[in-house]
Image 1 (cartoon, rainbow, N blue to C red):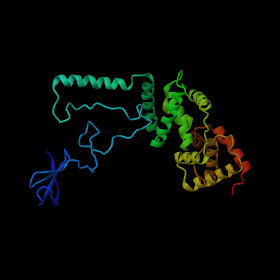
Image 2: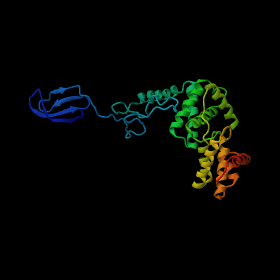
Image 3: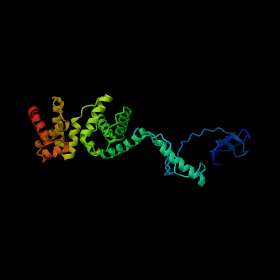
Image 4: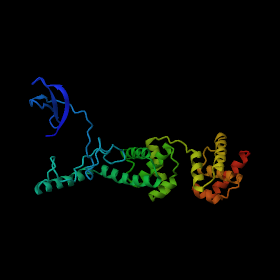
Length: 306
C-alpha cells in the first residue's frame, strides 16, 4: 500500500486529537495514524497524470500521447498492443498467454489496414514524408497536403492514376496556397515522375474540386533564384525594386514568374558588375536562356533603369 503524509494539524473526529493523517494513494482513503480510522474514502487526486505511451522506452513519460494528424492513415487514433509481455501488475505472462497475445498483435496490425482505402493512405503518406524531407516542408504544409490528398481520394480521382502522382499534385497545390516557392518541375523530379503526367492530374483535380489557386509571387521566386546564384544583397534589393515596378505596370500577368525573376536579377547583376551569366540564372530558375532573354527585352523597353 502506497502511503503519503497528508497533513499533521488536522483534528481527527474519531479520537478528537491533533494527529498525523496519511493518504493511501491507491484507494484514496484518509487514515488517522493514532486510531487507524478512515476519515474519507473519496479523495480526488488533482496531480498530473504521467504515463509511458512509448512501449520502447518506459522511462519516457508524458501527460498525453502523440497528437492526431491527417498525415497518418489512421489519424493517430488506432490502438496498439505493446510489445512488453507483462500483465497489469508487472508480472511476466506465461507461455500460453504469450502465444495468444502474439496472435492478438498480429491481427491488430492486420485490422488497421484491412481495406484498400487505408492501404492507399498508408502508401501515399509514406511518399508524402519522402517529399517532405527532400523539399524541407514544415508540418503545417504537410497537414495541408494530407487534407488535399484525402479530398482527392474521396472524389475518386486516384483511380486509374498513380498514388505518387496524386501526392505530387496535392503537394504542388498546398505549396501554392501556403506561399512556398516550389515549382512543378522540382516536385516531379523528387517524385521521379514526368512533369507532363503531374500537370494532367493537376488540371483534373483543379476542375473537379473547384479550387482557386493564388498566383505565384514573383518576389519569392526572385529571392530563391538569388540565393541559388549567391547574388549579393545590394543586387538582390535592386532586383526586388525592378520586380515591384514590373508588377505595378502589369507585366507579370500571364508570364512565367521564374523567367521574370531571372531577367530582373540579370539586369541587377549587370548594373552592379557581378559575374553571373544568363545560363547560371536560367539553370537556377529552371527555364531556358531564350526565356530569360525574351523577358529581358521587355524589361529594358518598359522600365527606365536609374
